[in-house]
Amino acid sequence: MDNKKTLVVGASTNESRYSNMATNLLINYGHSVYAFGLKEGLINNIQIHTQWPEKGTIDTVTMYIGAKNQENYFDIIKTLAPRRVIFNPGTENYELSEKLKNYGIEVVENCTLIMLRGGIY
Image (spheres, rainbow, N blue to C red):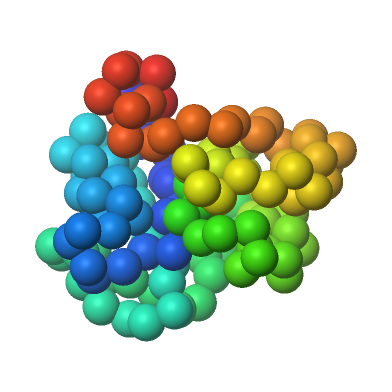
């Protein structure tokens, strides 16, 4: 298994949030995680950052924020130059998806939890 880093956008310390579950499951499956959220905190031993990661350090971005909160993220995601962006259920964003595709970034509309459990992550 490769250990390419996943950026979890919308990370939360609230254990009932899917971003929290995904962070834990990614770690359990051996993936490196960079958790990004509005408030600092910890998901187990993973720090939630309020600053974006360095360019070139992210393979996959997995979205856990709604489309209206994604409006200003295209430029930063483009700068990070990930291989793909996963839009989890409820985060789908046609406009952002098209922009990302036009920039050569793979767009996936799926559930990170299901992808991990199904071996297709």
